[in-house]
Amino acid sequence: MTLSRLIARPLLSSPFVVGSVNALRNAEALGTKAATVTDKIAPTLRNAGVPVPADPAVLVRINAGTQIAAGLMLATGRAPRLSSLVLAGSLIPTTLAGHAFWKESDPKERKREMIAFFENTSILGGLLIASGDTEGKPGLAWRAGRAAKDARREARHLAVTARREAALVKAKVS
Image (cartoon, rainbow, N blue to C red; front, side):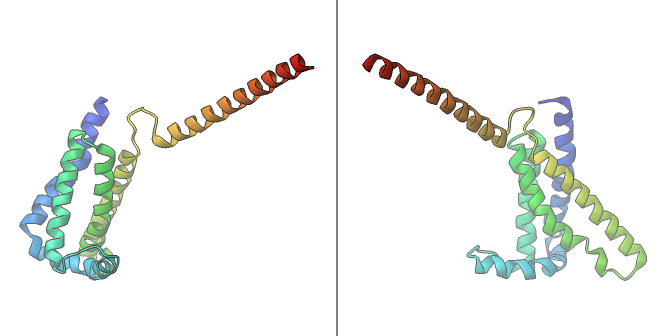
């Protein structure tokens, strides 16, 4: 692991670990804010067959636990691509519920929430970059493309060899 990854991953995961500990301590209060998002998403998930608790405070605790686990995984370099994707997925509803600046009427509060909203979107960008980081190793898409290219080259080589062999057999028979 490079020095930049060694430093960047814990820094990128720190808001999740710290914020999620706070969310666990204040799940009831945050549950009322989360209800604006969970009341819209939960029925859709239930219709899809996903068992989702009805209590928003429980969903806040589940989200916080997920963010702590994924944050610690990212910070320690364990499955960093997967943990980055999990954090990114959990950050979207968290940001929409927690920093709905468009609903604020007080200008100071609106500005504070807007700053927090865009801080979260910048963190989301960092997580998306981290989720695609292959640490200098070829990714699956590159490997698949390379395998296809190698297979085409081998097929052309085999076709040329087969034609050559057929021509030799034809010349011997004639």
